[in-house]
Image (cartoon, rainbow, N blue to C red):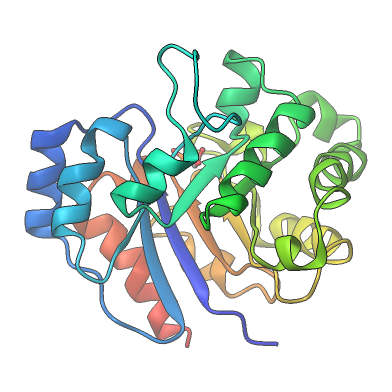
Amino acid sequence: MRRPYLIAGNWKMNQGPAQTEAFFGAFSAPSHPEVEALLCVPFVSLQQALAKAGACRIGAQNLHFEENGAYTGEISASMLQEMGVTHVIVGHSERRQYFGETDAIVLRKVKKALEHGLTPILCVGEVLAERKAGAQERVVGAQVDAVFGALSAAERMATVIAYEPVWAIGTGETATPEQAQAMHAFIRSRVPAEVRILYGGSMNAANAEALLSQPDVDGGLIGGASLKPDTFRSIVDTAIRLR
Ligand code: 13P
């Protein structure tokens, strides 16, 4: 099955409105039937990004699981939908680690995003100690099942998964293409064949081709290397070359 590539950037807490304008002044995403480009920018930069996105889709990095109400500082799915956002990252390891997000919270956020027609990008991944103990499949399998086990068939099909080994995030240490493929195949065995599984963790212009060539790697969730227009574009172009 040929799943369209999704090349997604996660800017994390980088690039405010002025830098976002400058980025999109220098970046244009190609229109390609089998390669989608997406940038998930900070909330305060969404407006600038959406105004200049062209063929690039724009996503958010988080949302709240309630519809609205007394949740100071939070952003709802309907607010994102109103702005024109199409995707939202849910359960990134940084949110799980620093903001106490549990599988139960992640599930509620995924459900809320889907209710509003937003594509959730569900992040899963093991920490170094778990990999060293050979527990990566148990850990990641549980993270996937906690969400996918509670979704309808239609909701599963509308969800994207990002496998991000925590030990490879921002460390310059990438999973080998073989390690990535093995975990992606493992995740694939638990979800419908149409679900896209992105790899994240120190993906860059130099290693993108080897990772994206793996049969079960359907794209990337790219942190540091998505902050510069030319490096991000070169990863998008790599995906296009592979199609
Ligand atoms: P880096 O590409 O900077 O390692 O970040 C990966 C990531 O966490 C994307 O969500």
